[in-house]
Structure formats: C-alpha cells, structure tokens
Amino acid sequence: MKYLYDPPGILKVMFSGFYWNTNNNKILLTFDDGPNPETTEIILKRLSEEKIKAMFFCVGENIKKYSSLAKNILDEGHSIGNHTFNHKILNKISAEERSFQIKETNKIAEEKLGYSIKYFRPAHGRFQISTSALLKEHNLKNVMWSLLTYDYKNDLEVVKFGVKKYLRNNSIIVLHDNIKSKNIILDSISLIVDEARSRNYQFGEADECLN
Image (cartoon, helix red, strand yellow):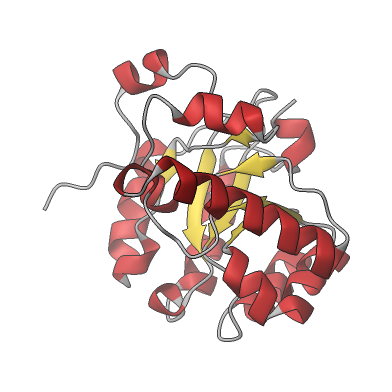
C-alpha cells in the first residue's frame, strides 16, 4: 500500500487559505481525536519532557466526556482545536449537521473549559468547497498538514519512513491521541523529535506557527 504522507500540491494551491505548513519555519506537532484516557496523559508527559507545545484537535463529545483531560491539555500550555463533535465526515452530512458539528464543539469548549477555539481540522481530513465559507462563518481557521504519520496503523516503520522522507522545518505533523496509536505513540514522538533535532529544526506553538 502506498501512503500519502504529504497532500498533493494542487490541493494546497486550490485551498491556499488553509494551513498546510507553518509560517515561521518551525514544526507544529498536532494530535487528533482526543482527549482519551488511554493516551492523553502519556502524550502530555512526553511533551513536557521534551519541552514541546502542541495542538490537540479534540472531538467535542470527548471534551464533554473527559473534560478533566481536556483541562490538563490547556494547563500544560498546549492549544485545543475543533475536530467536529463526533468525528463525522463533513461532505457526508447535511449543511445543518455540518454547522452543528462545529458549533457544538465550540460551545462545549466554552462551557467546560472556558476556552475559545480558533482552529479547526475536519475529521479524516475530508472537506469540500463550502468548508471555507462555513469556517469563516464560525471564525475558525482550517489547519491541515504536510506530514501525516499514519501512526494509527500501529506500525512504527510506516511512521519512520514518512518522517525520514517528508519532515521539513515548516511541517505540520499529524499524530493521534487515540487507542489505535497507543502502542507506538511515545516512540513516534521520540522519532520525530530526534530526527528534527538532528537537522537543527525547532518546534513551535500553534499561535506562532499559524500567524
């Protein structure tokens, strides 16, 4: 199977208003799907050890269910983004449901965390032409990626290949805060950190990388 670690250039041109890379030549680490009681805490511990601040694209119903974990993410100095309410694919649902997926997640973050979300990533990375207008309506910026690690495949060699070949000093990297990646998530983080530092790349925080 051929893995598409980096999205096609034509897609980036067509949707140039989305973030595909950072703007400051620093790497932004992102984690999708959390918070998750099986993985969030171990990820936070490793990030603290490495002194890296990341962006967690959280699912709204998970914030609601595990609000203490979501608070821990913020308390550790990381950012939280909107990853829809229950991980539904935008182009497979109605316009009304798309709006709900975004609004409900923002609402939960405000109510449970006192936090205003600024960034969005669609579930499974799937979006459509109308996504730009939808996000503008909700004052959100769409953050895609330039390196999808496929850590959810639970195969560190797959992650390693992608990192070695596609890591750049302005990469937005996708990892996963879920049960599928649990067995290799710490090794995946270490692999990325070691490779980045061997090239003298730096890691940045969401707001500085997406300015």
